[in-house]
Image 1 (tube, rainbow, N blue to C red):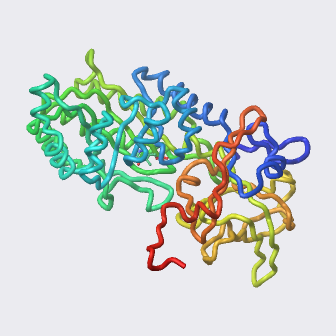
Image 2: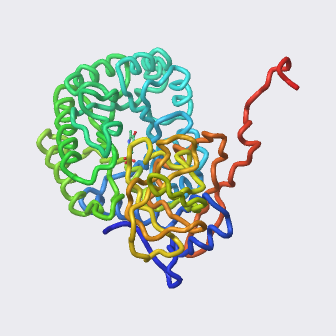
Image 3: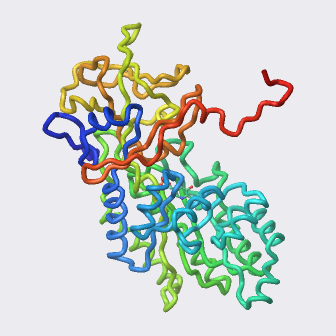
Amino acid sequence: MDLNIKINQQDHLDIGGADTVELAKEYGTPLYVIDENRIRENYKRVYKAFTKYYSDFKIFYACKANTNLSVMRILEEVGSSIDAVSPGEVYTALNTGFTPDRILFTGNNVKDEELKYIDETGVRINIDSISQLKRLANIINPKKIIKETGEAYKISFRVNPMVGAGHHEHCITGGEMSKFGIKDNEAVEVYKLAEELGFNPVGMHTHIGSGILDPEPFKLATTVLMDIAGVVAQKTDIDFEFLDLGGGLGIPYTPEEHLLDINPFAEEITGIFKSKLSEYGMDGVKSPSMYIEPGRYIVGDASVILTKVNTVKDSYRKFIGVDSGFNTILRPSMYDSYHHIMVANKASAKEVETLDIAGNVCESGDLFARDRPLPKIEEGDLLAIMNAGAYSFSMASQYNSRPRPAEVLVKNGESEIVREKETYDDLFNKQIIPERLKK
Ligand SMILES: *Cc1c(COP(=O)(O)O)cnc(C)c1O
């Protein structure tokens, strides 16, 4: 069992040294609680593991996992860079102190207005399709840029390595069913086209999926990416400045799963990286930097959602009803994901029955757990939905007209509100009732 769980002397669940029962009393429920030190530890663990074997290494935190401004500030402080997948994420990163050179934009089906915006920010664009390449060329006129500045506009490409992996088919982002990236067997052509258009393609990127606990697919994708990059380097005059292996590092969600053993993982990945650099003669003085883009691994196990039991219902099944729903964490409903659930006010109580934990959204799919072995649960108990740091608030909605809950940051036992809970009036944000419909 590798879940990030700490139980205090009152038999309450602790997060970041703070008692979850006290947090629920102070801030109300539902509540997202973020453990600052855990984010810092997760980042450092990866950084240390990889730089031990390859010093020219950078982490681009995939901020779609969690764009909370304080989380972004923590990652800026530790020295991370940012993988942004939308103009809004670029805007968020710039506004939380990341300089443009620390941001890589990897969009999908990006429209011209968005390309114009990203270009104006000075953030590097990682291109996903030939269409996007040609449209960017029309927008910025790369040949004119060379004339004016003497330097070519730098871009990179996302490549589909025909390898995919992930915890759910929706999360597999490589392979022939995937909408992402340029085709592996078109890479040489596309890099040549980019040069003809006046660009300087300095990087290659891939990202095969999410929630990967088995190193094999990541190793395979690294091998394939390095082979594609190697062939491009041999058949063109391109010197790669960076090769980006993407994210997807998993975390244990179930008690049976184990943390990815990051040190041997880093050793293997950097081993493949280095041997491929030398195989293709890319290991000279200007050997490329290695980037990875973990999102979930950095923030996933740093948060819990606290939610209170208001209803115990003996129907045809036994339901435990709580005061949040899939509008606060979509993963169980959307991906059928397992999230470990603890009774925060009696954290070491033994499992005695199997229960369904149901949210308060009016949809039958609004379940946090089905047939889950749990201790005896009573109305008024506080439940903690574990591992709620990644793809939780960032996917939250106001569905059912439920304002989104507050977020609290804890560090060494101290807590601070970092996002106020929304009010009913926030449900009306930006809406305009035409005059003729007004009462
Ligand atoms: C989502 C995403 C990631 C991060 O995925 P995780 O599973 O959270 O590590 C990295 N790179 C890109 C391009 C992504 O879209």
